[in-house]
Length: 310
Image 1 (cartoon, rainbow, N blue to C red):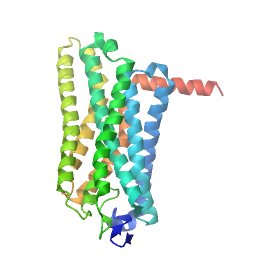
Image 2: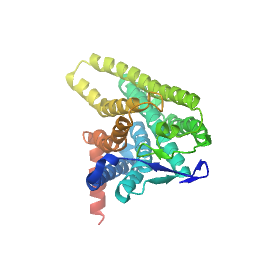
Image 3: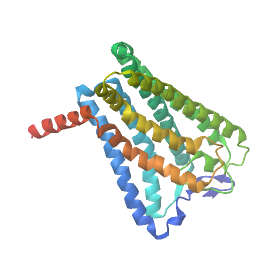
Image 4: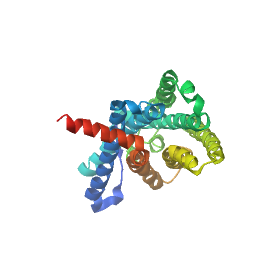
């Protein structure tokens, strides 16, 4: 645990209030994790296999699904192992790596949602120029921007967190290595990195939210001007799934991170984190696909090919 004055591993406190409900908690959240994994994996596989889904919208959705799989896999299996086995320790390097993956994938998701909002704006507001604007080259560049930009932003903060001395207490009051509870254990003044983290978080979240808001304001204004009710309904359905995911994602993440890192009720943080880690990733694939005729047609097409080849 503690070697001299230096912490070599942390204890994830998790949910001590569960008492005798560990088995039920494990079962429910394992099922949710598996549904999330299956749903997001299905999106990736179907989009890769079906040429008719090789469009910018599905390309960005695939990126979003990959980021969700990475983020949830960095958190949920360890949380479930802790609940089931009672072994709640995590090594120092593992803790730092977990935090880096979770936050960098979160940044990828924010940037990708912003790009998807732009894609929907071009599709609805400038349909005649869509193919000219949303070229394969631009889509690849935007995707690289999301992944590389997120990693660069998060790793610069993570390096500072890694460099802090941690001595004395090693109990993190969370189920994963969240930066706020972790910074409480640092034997140094963390005011500056908390401010920088808040500034970065606000820039990414509010910047992403503001861009998406502007995009959807333009989209709604365009949809309202469509003369036929059928046209308005079709245009709205094109964006409804993305708008639902955007609303859920921004609401939960802003509650979590748009405040100083070491502040706030840890019980609230844990509940909101569970929603972000388990509920939202489980529902997102269904929100994007359940009313999507093109995606359902692609799934049936792949299944028919599979069964006919047997």
